[in-house]
Length: 383
Image (tube, rainbow, N blue to C red; front, side):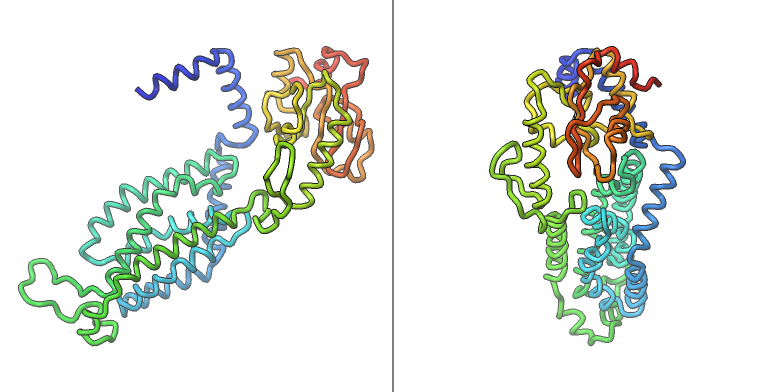
């Protein structure tokens, strides 16, 4: 029943627009390497390997904790209280941060299973099969089909965090719980595995720490929240966002001071360069700049990208030819230091527009007055 209203909404856009959207999506997927292939699979595997070896000493620590657990189970389980620290350290990798925290915690699920009490092993095995394994498949598929590769795998791995948290809680709850007698045994158990830690039997049975599991899980939630405030958009931490816009389309948004200066200067330059009948194109990957523009736009997508040679993509060129339009004013977002006007014109994505205003981080280019739409379309690359 859910598909009926969704289908109605989609059909309301018209079959032609749906086909165009599909073609654009496929073209973008090819360009962004989202459709996979052997090289993509190798890249994803390489990313996972770099993640797991990023903090190799954590692997050594995990092995030592397990060896301690084999000899002194209670002490080994107590050492699992350091998991939040391990998660924090594992995720301190550029371009990962919160994503790396999720991946590492998801990978820990089978390891944490080794520490849960014997009576919970059967239930734990079911969680590994029905939650953790499907989450691993979902994470790998997300990484394989995402332009960001293994970084995006955290989306699919998320359900595995439930199993990791549950296994960690079970292991920590067992710190102060006496071992259950073997099934079918009519005699009291011998000293429990907690007693084998070198503690007197009474202490092993009465000195429980029922708050330990809750405390550790709360700290993990704290790590999660902390990462959200350390999340880096294009490698910029929140602490560097100190300049707030007090007007315009970005009103109330905090950015770095140099970004604020850049956007303020761009807004002033756009007002000076614009004409009432202009159709604007911003290239490449600068959708936020359109917010300063209220006129016509000549683009098939706000998030415009280039092909491998630096020209407009086939999807954009096809859009221009289909609708018989071309931009009259172009903003090319790029470092312009050392570039001549001829070089900037050659870098206009195949439009061959000359620059009219050049700034350090962008250049304005305009279609010559004697160039017709047909002439511009004719010189665009054909595929």
